[in-house]
Structure formats: structure tokens, C-alpha cells
Amino acid sequence: MFSHVMLGANDIEKSKAFYDATLGALGYEPGVLDEKGRVFWIAKTGVFSISQPIDGEPACYGNGSTLGFKAESTDAADAWHAIGLQSGGTACEEPPGPRQGTTGSIYLAYLRDPDGNKLCALHRL
Image (cartoon, rainbow, N blue to C red; front, side, top):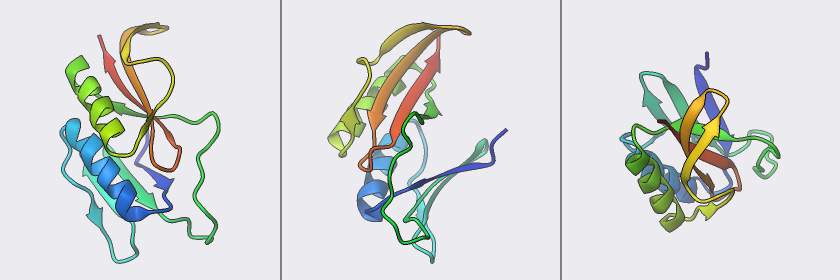
């Protein structure tokens, strides 16, 4: 359904380090910086990217927004969460663990990135 997702970042180097670490825990290669200062992580299922806002205003998070990343296992979700905390992210929501969703049992881990964007690693049990 989605071709790509781009989030605003105020400090590209800090955010790239955070996402290289957290996405690396999920099996993705480090992001690639382009000539415009944007960073892209490219997978068969889509593209995730960060950029300073083009309007010159500071990047800010969307209240009520969550960006979810697929985790292949509960261990991968836990690793994503732990390395995210070590890489400048902050914990939010409940601690990582199983939840009962409307589509069945899931395992969730939540973080906020260095700019406050709410992120989730999700593994379907």
C-alpha cells in the first residue's frame, strides 16, 4: 500500500545513527545519504527516509501518529527496543511484550526517536 515514509529530523547525523542502529537490529543495512542531505533505507517492501523539513521550520512529531516496523521475532523487537534506548531513543507506552489485538496476538515494543516521533516494532505471534 505504501511506497515510502519520510519523517522530519532536526539533526540528520544523530537521527541516522539512531535509525542505523534500530533498523540494523531488524536486519536492514545502514541508510544512504543523498546530495540533498536526506537519508534512505531501502527494502523490497518500501523505503523509509529522514529529512530536514524543506520549509525551514523545525521537525516535529505528529501527535497521535505511530510508525511501525515489522520485526521477524520477539527477540528482534526486544533488540530493536534496547538498541534504540542506547542510541538516543526514549521509552514510551508499556514495556515490550505481548498484546491481544483485534487481528490476533501481537508483540509490541515502542520508542520515541530523537525528534519525538513515536515508533513501534511489531511481531505477529
